[in-house]
Amino acid sequence: MVSERPRQPQRALGSQAAPDRRSDDPASRPRQLRRLGRDLQPQSGRGPELRAVDDGQTASPAVTRSVGVRAAGRTGALKRRTGDPWKPADRYGRELPPFTVNLVVRDVQRAVGFLTPVLGATIHYADPDFAAITVGGVEMMLHADHTYDKHPWYAPLTRGERRGLGAELRVFGIDPDEVERRAREHGATVVQPATTKGHGWREVMVEDPDGYLWAVGVPAPSKRGS
Image (cartoon, helix red, strand yellow):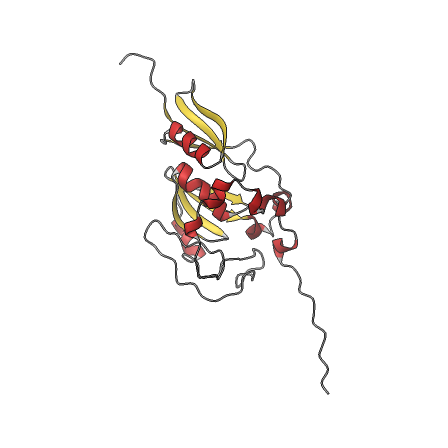
């Protein structure tokens, strides 16, 4: 008679040990934002991988992988995507311009669902871990909280503290009145309505789902004669 060996308990990896349930509960999000980005999800049932690519560079076909495994050769970030990446990380890094912006967000899909309709972002690639986007001509990255589980600021991120306080993401050349309209339509927070300022901008300030502040504007009409 062969006796069964007792099963070893599974240990939680990375951010699975302490998820930010308060911030990521879909029921707590504005209904409009929950609807946004729905078309980015696959219908195969394999997972929440996002496959939208606006620049014609499609990602490789998805392969069967376990969700929640760590990337090969890495000791840090937890990976949740279930398919092949858009392109190798080292290739993407070498292609970046001198200045880029990286935002660490609770939910990549939710962030994409704000940036695309409200600020007209171009989505090059997005999955549950990462997105490569362009906003106002600036290349940007979005990284999900769980990919930063080995960084020193992971604990403050998962405590739900406000992000980006004291920083403004300023985008010049997008109609602020139209941005305000779209923000209200999609349930986003308008911190300051479209206003003509003394520094020569007509601008609006909107807050994205993670609390980052976007100041969007165009040149204000000149008060001087032509």
